[in-house]
Length: 376
Image (cartoon, rainbow, N blue to C red; front, top):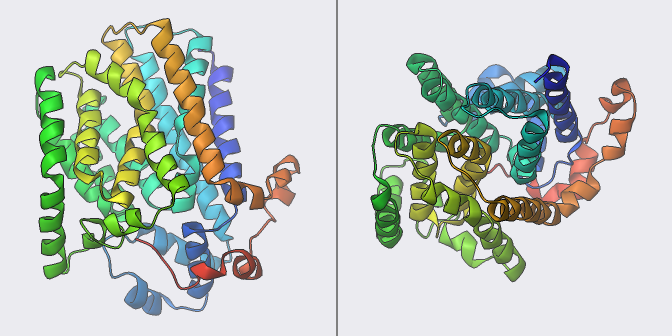
């Protein structure tokens, strides 16, 4: 691919960063917005004593630094989105350049567009920590799988876990699976066993976490972010929750039919399937594991192609349809946030675009219920 065409993907990363900058801060993003204004009046010692009690401190510390320097909170998500897409592009083009297949520019563009359709953009930006941490985690595994760099991989995985504590457990499980040569005939059996025993295991781990005051117990079993949250969902939310996951079935079919245990990207993908089978009843964890699955989906597709898989026109067409439907699900689910966003400002010169700020008054008017709330 010519350099100027590769540069177009960098420009696209900047565009997505601008989209993130203009995204209206409601839901979790509003919680961080309120925190930004709270941090303005806190010294480092006050901030550290009150808000740095957990293992994931990076995003909170950066937000405190921005608040003290007068840098708008929106610029934080601009930077994290720019970094995320440049990391994703780095993995993507490494796999393209080192593939056994010779891709035309159109074929590269086609795969990238399908990936953008399924990429959980609003969840990454709106959640602030987890989605961004997943990208960092995948880049760490890229360093190990593709470049054979163990120490840099460990450093990056630690960085991801300091962005969101749950990624420490995700990284441990995935790292273990990277070193397990599981034969194809055992894949379904393993998933079925994990699926069956997941409920009692969740209850046991939840009780252990609560008893020992370990973070994360609320996500398991009957925790507030586990089945309790799932039981409060309406029909539309349930349709979205399970519909989006069912739309990944064509990729799962291609993964199973063409599975090669020697490919470590496929082992990584299987580790997320095991995680999903073990957390399907815990709403928040199931959603976050789906973020892992969709974020690495393009790299799995490229790995399958690289080991010689030939996808039929019908299967590829079905994948495209599912990608469009996943994107439609996301747009519909986050329609309020998208409508509230001042995206028209992107057409202005950058100096005016960056003057947009969803201030405290805006937050109270549009997301006042999130004041004082900061989700894990």
